[in-house]
Image (cartoon, rainbow, N blue to C red; front, side, top):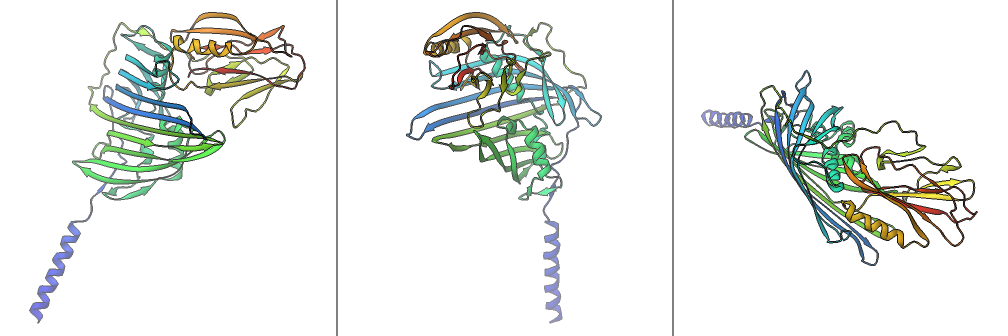
Length: 454
């Protein structure tokens, strides 16, 4: 009896010992890579976005698909005292954007850039491009759609691919075992929404986030999670999920891959908007020697300087608009539904400014005729002048100035607004908005629409 009891106790002890030795290993995902000058990260990204706008009767008024592939080399030019990159040179080795849209005459368009270089400097949690440094050894000038693609790429250069300091806010502060989950703190979510290019694109606010350590193989952790994002479109709050995955080396803290997907959908009045966006990036790390490589000596300058002093009375930096409004016009608050900005004078007249992005990237030879066609459909339209101009980035553009007459409205004198300045970067087309200096008194509003490509 005693012997049997001893056997049982020994067996129980063995089980307890075995169970203790099999305790789940925890991994620290919060490690920060220690970098040095000359370190390089080669990032290859493939992304796709689609947008469908459908009316209540089933008519599709917008159906756009964009696919982008790009390969870039990020080289560390300077680090701080703890080994974090504070200045980086980005070389876009190649980038191609394929677009399909009814807005295009041929239904599709391809935009390609080849070896464009620019410097990124640390600004808080994120990097910002120094647009004056953008050059290329191969491209001597950029078309409107090419510079829009370049701008989009460098606008997205908010983090170093090998260590996304903004996305790292989504990681746990304590070690976690495989299968373990965590919720992201409110403070970190707010900082992520402010710094992350994914969130800034849609001006989103992060409501909550939950992640999981799915697996660890040979020290490489696979994490996956969902961030609940809220955006406001035409005054209406839209909620959707942003799905995110990443591969991180638990030994060094260097990121090897990341991907994301979101599919927002909303209904505004009688119109339904459906969107989908996916992105996948693989990252290769190449240790440097402590010295940065020398760029090519024969570089073509493609960059643009920051805007200078601007004394105009109306500015909208987000849309790149600057206008000098006549003193007898007061600026009203923009319509929350349509976004139309109105200026009203004491003569019972008003002017509406409606700035909207083009549904797809276009060049001058594609978009110019569309603008002229639209103008000619307006009664008593008269083209005053059409002049070729050069915009920042050596982009050719046209300045169109026109006047309009209506049955009860005559514009004998017009005040021509100063050419639209760009607060961020050029538009491929610059329009001048004409404000009437003297109009016959009437109750109807006189709306002038402005369309530009961002």
